[in-house]
Length: 610
Image (cartoon, rainbow, N blue to C red; front, side, top):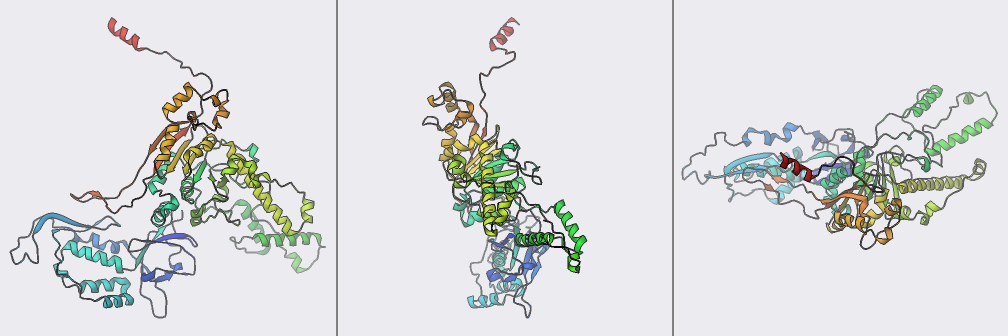
């Protein structure tokens, strides 16, 4: 992920109130933060993340606020101030009866004010708070007038509120720090720029619409990735070469995961981030593109290396080149300055699938189109036919429906194969008809490649976060896994996963070995993997080992002397549970143990002889 804010990228602005403002940074536009003000988007583009900005006052003749980077010494001035610490000697001052009214005696209890954002202690005191007669002399109308003026980034109104407080001198150190902290959060005009990574997206969506992501928390996403062993597989060796046919592909290549995602693409984004294919890479341009640009520079002089020909411009240039070759040579100056046209990126044949063979994700969905809306926040749209080929997910993400996986012959796209047309016939067609043929041909080739490679299996792992019955998912997904592949299934409630654990329990596996069902007698191991199950054995229990169920929840705690407890304002909702297991290959034939076995009876006889 980039360390700087990129144009057209998604970011999160953390406001002083603690809320998040998620937006896309579009150059040459104005970003409005409501009551805090507005500023040009160009002021934060190509600047580092995690910086805190302050909106300054508008200058004469300008309708926007300029920004100032707030240094860390200013951000934590109250926390690092020596006045916030308690008396080092720990002695309680002695007061008389008259002083008890303004300076109450120590209660023996230490009060601490903690900033919930940073977790640091702002102030400590051992005196009870006394502001029963405290009140603000400024009226509501005067405060609103100060808010409209908005001078000095909100610090002016905070100072006036504190100066106009009638009992400010009676406040204890704890009460004064608390009052200042509340007013600062309400009126200060500051914000912090945060990257829109997967944890930030999950936390923001959990507060906005938790049902859309099945109430999956950040720690549950991490558990799924760890138990499924999701990691970078290997560099694909066929990305710069011609793609092979599905029958010749190396299906045992590691780094191929099968995913069932009903979280609108959040789970896919988390897995892609672990595999290193979520963010566009900043690698150098390919060698063939540099050679092409070098030839252009030698012909016409200086050429912008970032310029790329679009498809329409490329077609026009190709047509012009064909006409140039067919036309007679002339000696005009324009003919001498003709530029040799070359494609900046070699085109792939319409009969080749543009997918990698390793480090890939295959998403199984139940609809006509997969719901991967959250991938748009990272520059990838699965439903966009003009998606940029430079994004890693373009060649490393494949989608397949349940119909194509179980009964591909019923799918119209897979079954309607387009015949090969000779180049002479293609040249005789009109441009619209030729474009339609190429578009349908490429779609059929992609669908055939995805279906054939997925049905052949040998995946490195299975990750599921869906509202479907996990038993029905495992019936068709487990046979597609390689031996030793991990399995991780997430569910909002525990009941579906409890039934799944029971299907792979030790008792059910022992019953399968002792008295197998009549439908499974006489079948080969390959046929038993595809067995549909019955009422007694919904699934083949010999295909999975180590089935277990677990849950985890990160709770925020308040850690203070004598008052350590979890925060009472934590979010509720479903706990969420994770099923974990491993795919195994049942042994064929009789298993015999070899070696010298020493029985217990022999050990007892040796001890009696001694």
